[in-house]
Amino acid sequence: MAFPFSGKRECHCGTRRTQRRPRSRALEARGRNIIHLEIGEPDFATPRHIVEAGKTALDEGWTHYGPTQGLPELRESIAKYISRTRSIDVGPQHVCVVPGGKPIIFFPMMAVLQEGDEVIYPNPGFPIYESMIRFLGATPVPMPLAEQRGFSFDLDLFRSKLSSRTKMIVLNSPQNPTGGVIPAPDICAIAELVRDRDVLILSDEIYSRIYFDQPPLSIASLPGMLEKTVILDGFSKTYAMTGWRMGYGVMPEWLVGAVNTLSVNSHSCTATFTQRAGISALEGPQDDVDRMVAEFRRRRDAFCAGLNSLPGFRCCLPQGAFYAFPNITGTGRRSKELADALLNDAGVACLSGTAFGEFGEGYLRFSIANSLENLMDAVERIRQFLA
Image 1: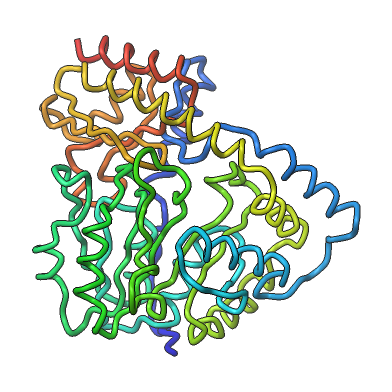
Image 2: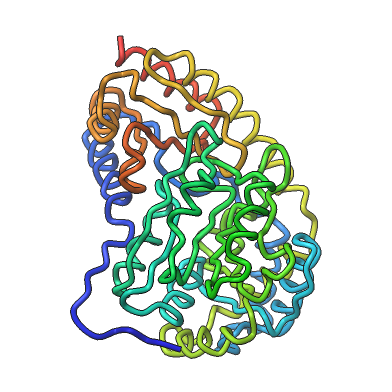
């Protein structure tokens, strides 16, 4: 196990994405009406039975330190949930509960990466992947996502990027920012290419329940992959619990000790009353999740149709998550230039595709976590701006 913290390092985690929100709030403070389509969190309330479980836990005194790895009852519940939904056999000993999803990016990378190692990661993708790879002195190897493949990998290009220095591969499906879902045949092909390599897969499945067609396939479910895969999942997106700060990793036992060591030295433990609410989330009614996904589908269909009616816009129908990622090259504008202009002149806040990496140039990311009325108003504002 390596902890490569020598030398001076800089981390710019999320900086490019978070700058836009203060700017939009500053415009609002001056009286401007802004439609917020830049925010990556569900606009739904946490389901009532989960809130009540959290309140009950507070009343019962779940307000003290808990085990670093997570409450045994929650880890058992997570293991059963993951085993059922991924068709694999894992137990509570494979589960680490952490405050949010990011530690399951940070800690496995800290545990296994050293200077000179290479990490293949999706680009455009969640900016924290590249930030953390660079912070640890490893070499980020961007994998451009192909629009014509529904923002999946070009498998020939992926094969060419594998090398003797490849130590980790990051997968994210359903994906932020594109909404793409890696097709099952592509997941199988990736597994074939790496099964016999000394490489760890970080499978970011935080949007696993938010899909609109075929359920995404977890690479951990394929033969020979469970012992070399870390599944990142959590409660924030599925149950609209972003502020509760609770995620988890399901990983091989050989990695659990390192993650626990890093956890106890960084955050000690995840809040115990939120963990009690997490048990209720997994074991209670799922109707609210189904309703949320159905509403996201309704918004997706209408908003993407609206984007495709705009001159210079071309938008693939996202298969998961709650984002639209239109190609805007037909407008003749660069991504950041257009995103800035939409905020300042049209009152529509979105993110430049380049906030998610160099291969995001030519795209914008819109979150559909807003009302259908506001989404369609945004389309008309953009139409008027383009005219």
